[in-house]
Image (cartoon, rainbow, N blue to C red; front, top):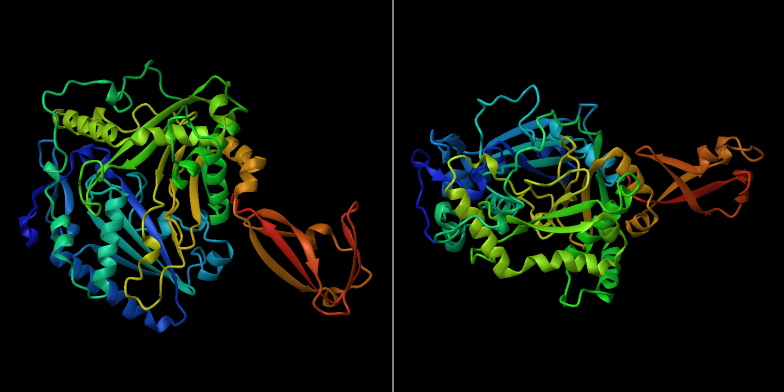
Length: 527
């Protein structure tokens, strides 16, 4: 592998990885946000300067991070000179009533709905909206620092044609290091500057074969305009370390004969596939085919350094029938996904994709989700292995309290697994049509696996005009949290003078007095 020695912005002329050369890819941004609490607002200036200094150090060692992506006029996209450092947008949202607060985020468990990209990100994920122009520069990296009441949200936008999420994670790690004024190692410098054109060895005399069946865009079967997409939405669902361990134990009990091991990632992905398929059986025939498209980092398979910052991922494709995937043992479904991760197969398929793409004058006909059908299929990217929860950026605020992917336009069947929290919790971001989402949220097996939150609401009922009143159940026993009503599941009374009798059939309280605590246990659904 060849390392480029580019130390001057004016010399930038870096050809993107072949996988990133698809025209639509160079218009997309991948976003991730870090939440930190702030107790002293007077530190805002120091925090801003720390990030600016870090970006200067990062750009000095790797000028391309401050570049822009441009077509060289021949359909080849390259990183070209732009600015001295990546842009850092700074916004003070403390007085903005539409902005979240740190306390509000914390109480709501950092739901996706409170991370609106239009508010907290420097650029949208998709090239749409009134502020988008095809003539806008396409920066390699852009950042936005949002000061909110009680904290900050730091959002990183990575240009998807330049990097996949593994590469973006490495750049964020190096920025955190630069913000602490730590020197980069020789290995980091060499890997960051690898020549992207030669990173994947091409196949000799390659002829298009079945290994690319899922990645060549076929002409539509009809010339009629496609139907209007159904209304869809995003939601976060969190899985505790215990729930993930139990899922994996369940899966391991019944594996396919040829599978000796499944990972937590395999198991959770299979569980999502099964649960969504059950929801879809309400509107689709049980014999309907379903395709699970799973993004896979292929650096190891191609003997490329794990911290290579470019885009080097492929997808695996698992096919089943809705009824089969919904009803078979979890371990069998997980085995299906695991069986697609063979090193030699992934290496060959990726080389074939790169070789074929290299020979195409127009790469618009190639896509890793070419034949994905949103009403029946799933497109999932797992960020669970990323180390985002470990980065402090030298801000003096400790490690982030939350790491989230900001909310963008719903895209049916697109899904992410968020970076694994330090305690092992994984949060999944799912986009589904509203009908499927509603059914999924009411699925008993799905609900029983999700993490639940225990929180307490204390009320002095004497001060509210009791005893003797008959308060309405909904006022005292149901707490509305993010529009989801949660019923109190047990009650306690810290002062000895309290007394309570409860009519479960009629749903109201008798003989209330004193201070009571109503304990709520809910699943993290959001609407």
